[in-house]
Structures are given as structure tokens and as C-alpha cells.
Image (cartoon, rainbow, N blue to C red):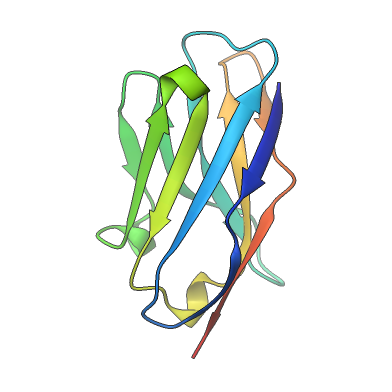
Length: 114
């Protein structure tokens, strides 16, 4: 499975961005897709995930500000980010997990200026 993420960039605090990630290759019908992020000097952390049946999980730090969604027909996952804060600055990684192994995208940088 290959993952191609896009949508990162520079935004002012309080602004919005939308990340997209498309999966291709041998994709199982039952899977989980989502986003993790890694800020400079910190460990990679979960942002949000969504299963093929639509169950979502969010990090406490983004609840109410971010929304994850997916398009099964396109094997794509999206992250709508709002009310962005400088502490949201990180490289955001798309992930696809088919419960046999996890796949990772190349990462897209999100920078939130104060």
C-alpha cells in the first residue's frame, strides 16, 4: 500500500487547513486510516483515526477543532483542521492499517504562526 498525502502549509493561528491522503495498491476492505504528527524534538503522536466502518478516535488536544473523514471509493482520508494553534505545528503523517501491518505516508508539514 502506498500513501500520498497533501495539503500542508503555513497558516496563521486561528486558521484552517485540510489534509488529504490517498491510498493505492492492495487494500483490504477492513482497515483503519488516520493521521499522526511529530513536532520537532517530540515523539510521533496520534491525531485522529477512522475505521472502514466510520468509527473515529481523536487526541484530546484536537477534539472539537479537527474532523477526520474518509471516502471509501477513493481509499482516501481527510483531516479538516480548524482553530489552529502554534502547538499544532508538526509534520503530519497519514497512516493505513489493515490489521496485518501499518503503512505510512511521507509526511506533510503544517506550520501555524502566532
